[in-house]
Each structure stands twice: as structure tokens, then as C-alpha cells.
Image 1 (cartoon, rainbow, N blue to C red):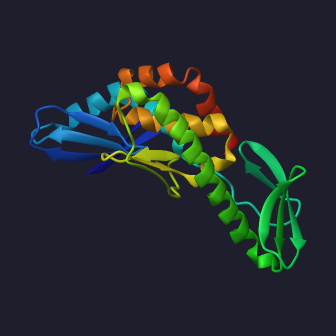
Image 2 (image 1 turned 90 degrees about the vertical axis):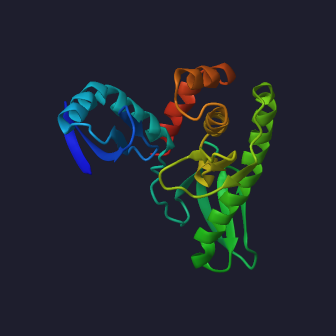
Image 3 (image 1 turned 90 degrees about the horizontal axis):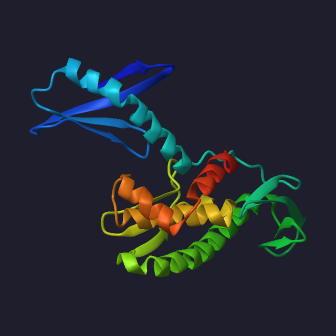
Length: 231
């Protein structure tokens, strides 16, 4: 059952599922969906009363997950357009050539190609190759630092995710969005640390944030940069 309620200037949508349980649970997913798990005999009035009480927490959770929702605008792939790489802006320079290659040169992102139509695919392939290299390098460093926690990801994989910067599976696979290669190194590390913490604590409990702060003091700064930079 789907419904919504007004809290101040915000409208909060939610979905209720009923099951054989004794207490009411509220979950905010990384996609900002609000899921209510209610006992079979729960009254809708009581559910709505609890929702209003928990509304500030719900909005806080939804705001938190915004840092994991890419909002990059579609770039044009013509000379003069700017593209991000590790937090810096580079002007694209397209050169007609028999070669097909992409390189950073004198503050420019240079693409050599015989066909202008290939520029977009060449740039995306270059970003992906750089992301694989950089993410693995940074992940290895942080996995080593997390040694005392006794966690070891089963693998680090890249996957385009329209609503998330990173995630981890119950079996320990860490998934990173290749679009992160456009953000500063600190932002990439923040997402990696966040997912490593989830291998210890699955939820966003106080213990989770204490662990995250222990390993990355000032993570809030990088979270904020990620929200603002790739908007």
C-alpha cells in the first residue's frame, strides 16, 4: 500500500507492507524510498502517528543518501567543452588524426580520432580505464588500513548506477560507480571507506558513523564536495 503525508513543506511518500511481526519498522532505502514494515493488526492511524514523529529522521536519512545519487549533466563531446577528472576541469580538444587515443596534455583532454562520432565512446572508455586503475589502487590502500576490523571485500567491481555512488552486497562485493573518477581523490576515498564500514555495520547506526569517523576524520567535507561538485 502506497501513501504520503505532509511534514512542513515536504511531502513524504511511503509504502506499507504487513507481515507477522510484533513491532513497526521504518526503512529509508538508498533510493530515498520509505518502507514501513507493520504488524498485521496495525491501525493506519497509529502508523501515521509514528511516521509524523519519525519524519525528521526520515528526511535526514533521505538527505544523507543524496551524496550517493549522481546528478551529472550530460556533456557535449566537442572542442572547448569542459570535462572533470579527479576534481579538475579539463577542456576537450578534438584532433583529426589517423590515431584513436585520449590523453591529458597541458591541461587539456586531448582526443585524436579520424571520426568525430567516436569522441564520446573514446572519452567514456578512457574514463573507465582510469577508474579501474585508480579505484583498485585506493581500495587496496584502504583495505589494508581496515585490517584490524577483519573485513576483506570479495571483489571490487565497477558498475554504472544512476542513483548510487557505491554499494556493497551481503557477500562482501563492493560496487563503485565509474563516474566517481570525475571527483577529487578524497571523495573517492570517502565512498570506499563508507562501503568498507558497511562490511562491519550494515546499517547507518551510531556505531557505523563512529567507525567511519575513526578511519576518515572529516569525511563530512568530502561528502559535501561530492554533493556539490557533480551536480
